[in-house]
Image (cartoon, rainbow, N blue to C red; front, side, top):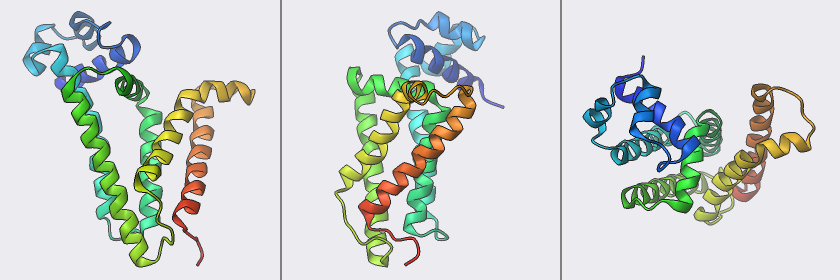
Amino acid sequence: MISKEENILFAAEKLFAEKGFDGTSTREISKAANVNISMISYYFGSKEKLYEKLVEYRMNEGQFFSRDIVERTDLNEWQKIEKIIDQFSNRIRTQKCFYRIMQREQLHTSNPQIVEFLKETKMSFLSMYSRILESGLKSGVFTKNPPIYLLHSTISGTLFYAFNAKEMYKEFLNDTDDEDVFDEKFYTELNRHIKHLLKDLLGYEENK
């Protein structure tokens, strides 16, 4: 069961992805969420605050899971990297609306609070990758020390480019499967591809 607040957030998310922030009215959000328009003011104060809360909510979800992976003692550093890639990829696959919003925000946002929140989130991921790399080098799991900011760019840049180009790839492959079936194959191959790249970048050898 989701809360009333989450119900409004998720309804707004779909509309923001489709129409953009400026193109979405609070009346449309309340209709999609099947709530009185006054509930938006009650829970969020304004459309701007609702938007900020949505970004914070989704970004915190991903960071919480990633932090949990980093702290696990039953995984080595490469296994942590693998799980982070799988989790990141799955979020992009299952939360298409939010990541469409985020890509638009990267280019066009004028909201200083969201700009700062996105920056803090990226810095947090850079710190997380740094911790894993440093630990992996000490333990001998990794033998190479690539620049962290480029490691992060390799993961997120490849995922987002593939996400944006998925329909073109489907056409290129002349794939007639329905979307869910194609998604399963596409993201499985994408994850495998990114892991192959990172093995080389990090100097990880599976059976050494």
